[in-house]
Structures are given as structure tokens and as C-alpha cells.
Amino acid sequence: MAASLKILHAAGAKLRVETIEIGEKVYLGGNSSGIEPTAWDSLRGTKVFYKAPITTPEGGGYKSLNVTVRKSLGLFANVRPCVSYAPYVATKHPVMDIVIVRENEEDLYAGIEHRQTDEVVQCLKLISRPGCEKIVRYAFEYARANGRKKVTCFAKANIMKMTDGLFNEVFDEVAKEYPEIKADHFIIDIGTARLADTPEIFDVIVTSNLYGDVISDVAAQIAGSVGFAPSANIGQHCAMFEAIHGSAPTIAGQNIANPSGLLLAGVMMLTHIGQADVAEKVHNAWLKTIEDGVHTADIFDEASSSEQVGTDAFADAVIARLGQTPQKLASVHYEATAPVAVPTYSRPEPLKKDLVGIDIFTHWRGDADSLAEQLVLDGDAPFDLVLITNRGVKVWPSGLPETFCTDHWRCRFMAREGTAPGNKDIVSALSTLAGRGVDFVKTEHLYEFDGKLGYSLGQGQ
Image (cartoon, rainbow, N blue to C red; front, side, top):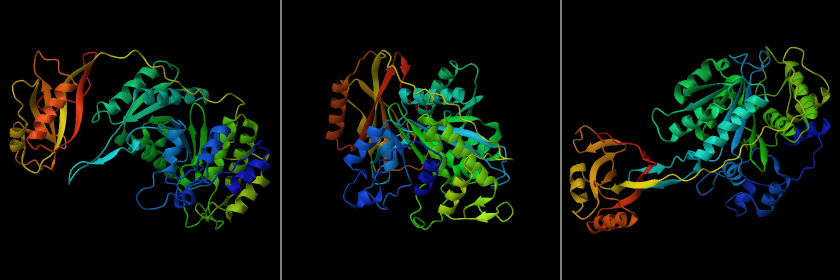
């Protein structure tokens, strides 16, 4: 951070810096969130956060501060450019220039996890329509503002038909509003394989939180080094800029770290706050430094490097080249334009929601048939047991004896024909099962929304 700020100031950046302490020292000082109230006041006041790598202490009980800051400040869009700098930085992909736009607030990173039985834990994957609409529209707005020609959606909708299916559905809806930009889809697994093999076929990639975290590290590494990759976290009210790499406390303060990822995040910050001319000067000076072979240890190669330097000397080398442009690497130019438009979400009228059943998850150490016997409800109840699954595989009725089962069972009850059950009926059914000693650990209501199923079907339904 000291090296990066030194370069930005030398280039003439108009910055008034408020320094705040977050991370390990704050955690160990007794604050379990890793950030003090005064630090929040500073972030909300300046609205721009230039974040150095921070450390979360090892061991349980400490939440990721990165995730906390992004979600608390509504920084929904994580923008990660990944560019190769061949032949000055070793890479197998010399023409790579892609941008990954990652959703930042939901998905599995909601961090909602539970242990439900002796053998089973769960993590909830939360995908919302507002989250999908905002990140997909931001990706297209980014492409339009930066002259990009294509936006590709990465998801796994062939398996997670409702969560990733919603992401795909919203992508197709929003893409129609940008007819000048090509839009296409990849399933996340083959998409990642193609990204690692032929990244030049991609331009802008938009995806959900976990997928985006994984593929941006893949993309940065095959471009030449994760240490080069910057990141912008954009929201309606605030923005945060950081390197995508994590902390490395074992080398902190030893004058050997590569400041490039954080410096290029500073370039993104300067364009965001309207100092495009300074951003251009810094970025071109950095490119000239790389082109001249002045490299830190992580990328030093006798075949392409002329001098191995530490953090401070690298900063001095960039400063010495301010005002210069690279001769072989492509120089950059930043227009003094407004930041990429940040989408807002308008909530539509609510849909008609009808309760049609309930999934009851139970902790049971026996087999499916004996469990089913415990779950039969009397004739007055508006529900019938229709299905039992174990880890998503149907085991009742007519399960296969080869199927391995844990002690965690999903028991699906559907409303009997001609009934219109409500929450009181669910409470009554649960009370009946509790009286029989059935250990239910979780329930999920099954709804139809405007007549459309709001749940995935099981085998045989």
C-alpha cells in the first residue's frame, strides 16, 4: 500500500487519505467483526475504499472481513480484469484480455450453514432476482462503456435449475436490452476449461459469487500472475478497490512483495473518481516498467527480465517512467467519462403464492420404509407423504437397495386434492410427528407462484 500510494501521489492524484485499521489487529483486540465503528464512519463518509491485503486470524469464530465489507456497503459488482503481458511476463496466452464481473453479495457466500444431523451439514445457496438483475445489467453496462463486444454467462443451470436457472433466465432477459453486444452461455465446468485453454474467445464474463471467485483466480494466474490482478467492488453508494490476491503475512514488511495488483486497483479507483488522466499516466508508466524488464521476484525470469527489484525499488521505477508509454505493449487511454452506470432494482407487484406442500427433513438412523411408517398422517390432515429422498436420491417408494443413505432424509408431503392448506395445517402435522418421536430438523414450504412450481421435483413426481 505504501508503494502504491507513493506512485499515485507522484503522478499527481488528488487524494486525501484517511487511514483506518481493519483486520487481524482489530480481531485480536476483541472485535469479532474485525472493523471498528469509527472505521465504518470513515468508509461511509469518503465512499471510496482503497484496501490493502488484510489477514483474518486462523481458527473458528472469525468471519471474512472482505465479505462483511462488500455486503454491508452493498458492493454488489466485483470487476476483475485479467490481461496478459507477453513476452515480458511468462504466459501461454499472449493475447488474453478479459474482464470477469462477479456477483458479490449472495450465493453460497451468504455463509448460512447448519449441522443438521450427526452426518450431514448444509450450506444455503441464495440467488435473488434483484441480485441477478443488478449484476447482469452492470456487466452489459460495463461492456458498453468500455467498448467490449460480448458478454458471456457462466452458470450450472442444467443441475441447479432454480438458482442457476434464475441467473440464466435473467441474463437472457437483460441481454435483449443490449442488442449491439453479443450474449452467450457456458456451463461453468466446460466454461472454466475453455477459459483455461482458450481465454481469447471470451471478452466479459458475468457469473455468480463462488464461480466468479474461482474463475477470476484461474484467469489471473494463466494471464501471468495472480499478483497482477486488480479488483473493483462497486455499489450504489460506495466503492472498494483492492488486489484480488489475499494476504501474505509471512512476507509482509520485507520489501519483496509485488505491488502491481494493488497499484492497478488504484488505477481503477482513479477512473472511478474522475481522474482518468492520472490513471492513464500511472498505468502507462507501469506498463513501461514491465516492458523494461524491471520485475519483482515473483515474476523475475532471466529470459525476459533485466533487473530484479524489491517493492520500494519497483515503485521508484514506475515513478521514474511517469509520462512515458510502452513501446511494444499496448498503451492505455482512459476517457474522462462518468463511471459505469450502477443499476437499481424496481420491485414488481407480488405474485399469487399458493401453498401446495411441505418438505420435512428428518434425522433418522433407520431405513426409508420404517421412516415412512412413522410419517403417515391421519385422514383429517390435508397432506399425504409422496416421496422420501436421501441426498437428493429417491429412496421411497420403490428405492434401490444399492443406494447408500445417510441419517438425513427429505420427506415430501403434498396437499391432498381439493384442499387449500395453510401454515396452521403445517404446524398441526409437525405436532403429530413430534408426538411420534420423529426428529425433524428443517422444513421447506412448497409453493406455486402464479401457478408455476416454486420447487424442484423429485424422482417419480
